[in-house]
Length: 416
Ligand SMILES: [Zn+2]
Image (cartoon, rainbow, N blue to C red):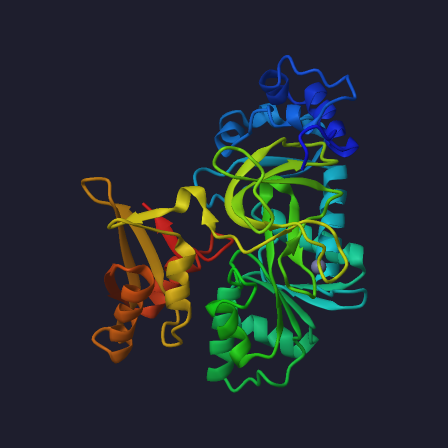
């Protein structure tokens, strides 16, 4: 992008709107004149970033409409740090519905389809309500089962015959495990598509990663990746070409920036920085998500020219420094997801007395002293270059620590 190029009208509208309505940006962008139509990307790049701490420390200053106009109060998932509130106006809810309608349409969901939602819709969770609204906007049907309880999920699948599931992919492994143990056919049921949230299912070449492969090995389903965070109130979703998740350019402006704040080249990796478009409740400008992914600018084989994001490589603040190597959680997930005998595991990252990261892995006690455990150690050695500490517990106890009732996503890793 040429820095002399003028910023698009939609971006100017966001900038003008926050300067008039957001107390945070009135202070943060003091002295910035947007009256001129000559606002170029050169000037845009000088705008300070917004980060999660800004929203958490000045939460109410981000509210850009009177509180009485807020239709829905959502909170961030709290992957790191305390959750913050994102205030949605009625028009933001409409935007959310359009976002998810377009997003699901990319994954081939259409009018008349039946979708089973395996994520929570309450607890101020944005994704659940976004899916609900989007499915209504698409004129499709929804079965709101919510997270967990494989028995209930299967009862519903067999009874209502949904074509599409929306789920976290590691939970699909548990569904598969349940089906195998209870004589439910994975070859002959209604499910054709699973829209995956919260976890990567592809590697950086867009092939299915170990988690994705483990699902499709047993279940002939088409998996679609998504990427979203609450603050952006928008989802990036794969089309049928499955070559990265598409940006919805009407709802969000995307920058993928290197360490120096410069836009990365096509196919390069950087931090995802977003600016919301047509948002009125909690508009954000140059918000640093902390998520790292590759950006792809070439026209997709589906015909869309919207930029795409590759799988999330990791979060900036989830880099683990372990015995001289740097590891992202996904690398550890890849080691354990591939081993079928590992039904569930939990990674605990802590600090020693010298502030070095320590990695402990909880594994089911049946694996202790087994040949599978020897294989795990070998895989850690070759993939991670280091061997973490292992602790063995009953499977149910590990599952309770991963699929916590008050959490929306499985907590496969925790930093303490
Ligand atoms: Zn495409």
